[in-house]
Image (cartoon, rainbow, N blue to C red; front, side):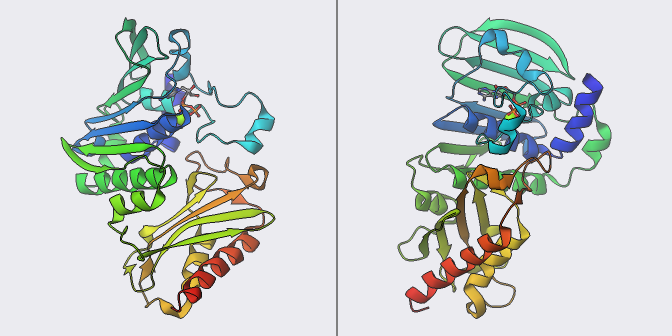
Length: 321
Ligand code: ADP
Ligand code: MG
């Protein structure tokens, strides 16, 4: 089991940022209002995620670290209508097979602490805890030296962590999210449900009129979010975020659709800041294409892309831009 978990880890956990993504997604799925992320040495030394969500019952705790032991879907059919960010039941066993993990969790009453390293349970004991979960992942890849060698510089690994935390925060403005690296707070959102506030705390773009709200409803899709004025561009595509039913996705066609909405208003090599929320029937989306769930298959992708372009184009022309 340890070996198969390590193999799965190779697919789900590429780098420290993958651990951050999986742990924060679990905290979101647990219904948290506040999530604090603490990272040391770009996550290679420590990644700790503290939430105030549901917690895990003591008798379920070890099970949560077993492969495919997800509490989020009961049935194969559910796979086609997943609403939670997780559903494969692979993250915790994968992470625990390649790091030293301590999780302290409580559903409200007495808490439990479990210590797992290299896939082996070292202890499980009662522990003092408030409702929620605190998971600390230390010494990532300590037993996978080949993987450690693939790590880029600490700066690169940290920037990937910042990037994924930003996207998760943009997708969940109602949750207060903070990120601290080597004792320095890098970001904190307000958790007031105000997307513009989150865009402000991440990109410093919350001044009135810099970001334009977009909204459109169609029989199959609902589009909302913010796009920047055409003159407020960046030299990277990285400032465009697409969220599909609350999940951050990477999608070439939809990214192109955002850019096309600006047409000739964008200078060559410049890209907007944009957060585009797409809501659609989960039956129209297959999220089970890749273990990291960032690539999805969307039926009616071309129609959707056209609507995204048209929505942005209409907004910009309404502003006489
Ligand atoms: P998945 O998210 O795909 O279900 P994971 O391996 O990420 O699989 O987590 C396994 C299970 O552990 C989850 O289904 C959930 O029941 C529980 N769990 C993990 N993290 C948390 C958390 N922060 N709060 C509450 N439950 C959690
Ligand atoms: Mg998960």
